Image 1 (cartoon, helix red, strand yellow):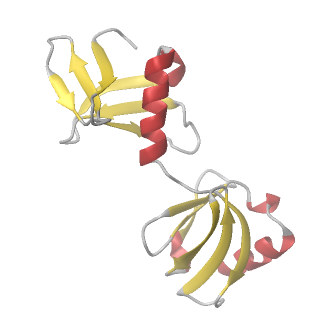
Image 2 (cartoon, rainbow, N blue to C red):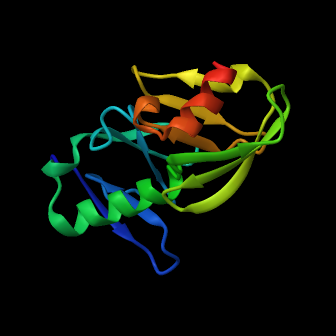
Length: 155
């Protein structure tokens, strides 16, 4: 951190940013510029109105207590379960309900259209379900054969 500001959590668990002039911004957000390809780099600290207050080039530049606070806030705001296995789908046409195993347990998602499966930085896929939850598949080729077969029908 460049020393021009301070960060701490208030009693409500909100991230508080204090600039060099002593002005406080309460309940700021930490946002990754590249959440999948560079999760610990290029972090913006944003005021509630969306204005950038500070830029963190790399989380490793923060002292440990602050790094833990920012990483916790990023984990909460950047919840993105990773699909480990596609168990079944209700239909090979959309909309369809998918039963999946994720790194956070078993769940289901509703795929509205095939366009809700997006290729990010190859080979990573992002699936956005009908509720707006984003699911990640880091490498489709690393999935089991049945999961790959199901996924291929939608790509």
